[in-house]
Length: 401
Image (cartoon, rainbow, N blue to C red; front, side):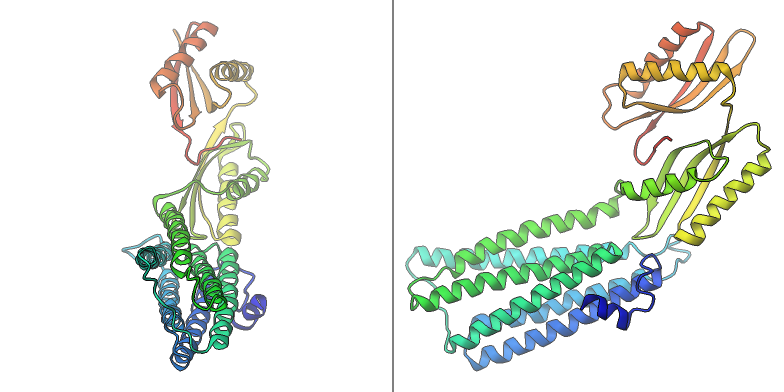
């Protein structure tokens, strides 16, 4: 059914990297959520009044309020699809993360509200004054609760399918909200059935409600973290890094790459910088033309803004080849996790400058200054007239190939 809805309402639905298609996904998800929640909530409120069930009326009001989350999501996708402007030169796609954050906080508030009501109910239960459930039409109550579970379960799977398809944290938050409603209603169904079967002697409604409330609160905290992380900046996926590296290295004339840095300004809105090593013996205009082609390839086929720094290297110099092995052994002796790149030799009358960068992970046992001093000392032991100029890079998105 999910694929059918996409085929009917989203043109070119398979082009999930296209911003227009992505916006249509969000619009479809928002409209489906608004319509299904309003219909389900209205039916519950009307039936709850007819069968005199306060539980169904409350659940119906909650479903109607869920439509607000869908409206927030819909607005978020509309705003995030706006073109870049002078105030926001990198676009507005991060609004989608803010939308997900708002929905996550709403889920947290709902969870805390359920927890408060459940604790009050448990206290009354301990005091021997449990809250009585008003159920005049048992069959209608059970049917409506089962119907709600089925609809909410489908909503959760629909939002999850849409969210995974376009990597949308906002839709995944809506999926979690619907899943929480499914669990809440299922707990209500179990406690209601037990209440009916025991003629009102077993009332676990408040206990079940507290368990569900704790689940919702923990779920919302996880969602808040998942939506805050991309706003702060997170490590790009291994798939994205591998794709960029393999594509760049596939070009004839590229000898190596390093210092890959990926800045994300929203889903599928990545700005990339990378250093590409080329032979110093090749005409710089030829290498520059190749770099232009790589950048154009990413813009056209991946909707990705890539800026490449050209690094001419001398891989035929016997001394550089030998020095690479020396440095590799020195770093391996310190810690195999260390890597290096951009090795150059500048010869002088009295000494030779050896310039290169070391890639060091976060929290490494040696501080940058200590690491440079240790490596410099070892290289001087190899050749006394070598003077090292070392730059220690932080390993955030940086990789070396």
